[in-house]
Length: 114
Image 1: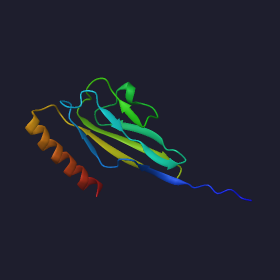
Image 2: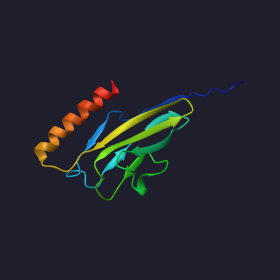
Image 3: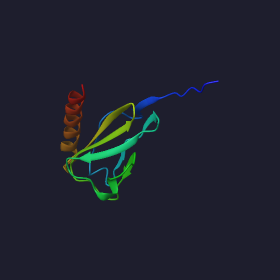
Image 4: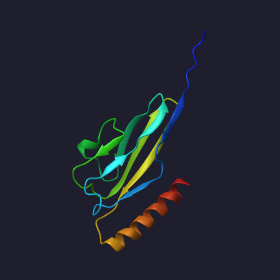
């Protein structure tokens, strides 16, 4: 009798782009966890450069210090597909300015992904 294998491309548990504010997220966590069969491998890149702690095949990255402002990307891949999630670390600013930047960044990311 033959075996049946269910194969799935990667899909993120939380697929929407995320904005991080250094004033609030002093020890940021970037969660790129995805499901898939076979399980996905992860690759990270950033416009701001990656701290050494953020390299490698990790789905969740934690740092003990604020990240430089910029865009951080995570790609989850298996033999069937690759999907990318975007994280935006905003420049430090006042709370009112930060809220405006978050709204603008998420709106731009939504347009870019559409």
